[in-house]
Length: 187
Image (cartoon, rainbow, N blue to C red; front, side, top):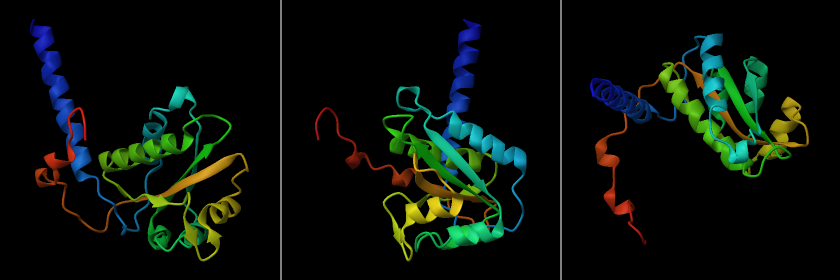
């Protein structure tokens, strides 16, 4: 009986820790110049690869970008990517269309795992949509594919700038929990 109670207590504690990370996750668009440590990036990518995928397809591919000129070029992909150039690193989330069925959804789940582990590592991130987006160069996806040499069999979902936040945004609060958005059995 003691073992079961300890397990339940630890499970509750971990659940609370996960909820705290979720509360702290905000879209960060301003970063300090400090480099992101390699082990932190590796941890973020590991979390992304731990995400679920349709039928275990694991169609994701990631491009880590640290080069200043490349980040500057990425910041021109869409009008909403302007801050990518100022982040110490960026992860471009792609998916191989030959490797899965629900690859766009899988790539988006990976991006959420990137967000959460970035917060867990004391970093910030933001989801910059590339798929189905347009920029001054036309298709944002075609622009990014050309810039980074992404093969034809792959699609680009998003750019995730990563860095130490230069801005502090308030955590999500319980006031954002809107029970009117919850429907039981029927809408």
